[in-house]
Length: 286
Ligand code: SAM
Image (cartoon, rainbow, N blue to C red; front, side):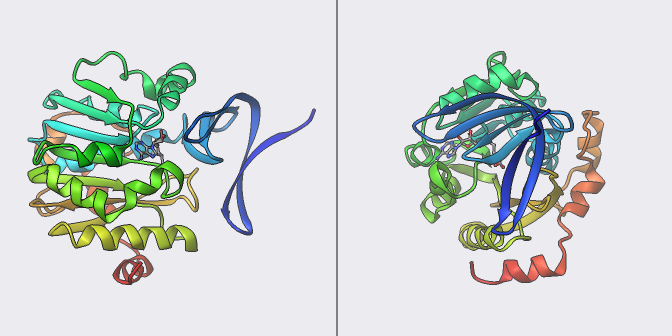
């Protein structure tokens, strides 16, 4: 029996491979190459331009950490903007809060949404059955540019890496517009790459340096993401008013009794305690 493996390069001389039972689907869209695979250990997973986006087995880690950290800091968040997030996992998780009144999801590639609705119902299930959610198939960079001041309380940038269509979501202009369209107590969470391999560390520093001069509070938190390069992955937490630890509403978040598999308020506090080498890298110019 011929073994079929999906491999992703994490560095020039380093690969991560998953043996696949089936290459379910492949398509080249005007924006990127989309592939869906089935595997024993990670279940169904999909890649964009050869990079793993999401697997059934570990998606909960990423989607819980991008949403519950800001929601445990500012319980008054009502209007949310998601940039990217085509698999629907971030929408699914944020819509668990009945205090949220409006979610705009801006995904550049409609094919990602339609294919995840077909092959990955685990994350895409809320995309067509929650009246609070509106999906806009356009470039997130253009969307924020034309959005009025103080429109949102929370922006979640659930983007690909800063290559291809994702590049525009790591620019000064984009972060400036995010700052402008956030309310006075607004929070920006962004996919902040990784400190471990050189290339990813470079992108982490570049993003951090652009964000920290636009927001009074700009911090980074970490989580374990087995299928991303090195497994050590980061989100950025930027805010006009709230500190992610000093303003954590631990008791009221726990009183919500939201069942989670990864996030809890102790882990929330620990996630911002970074290794020394990461602290040192973040202090350097990108
Ligand atoms: N969790 C994944 C990660 O960390 O790489 C990202 C999930 S989601 C699949 C990323 C989405 O961002 C993709 O569906 C992609 O089409 C979308 N995207 C990339 N560039 C974009 C842009 N400029 N505007 C809106 N969506 C964009």
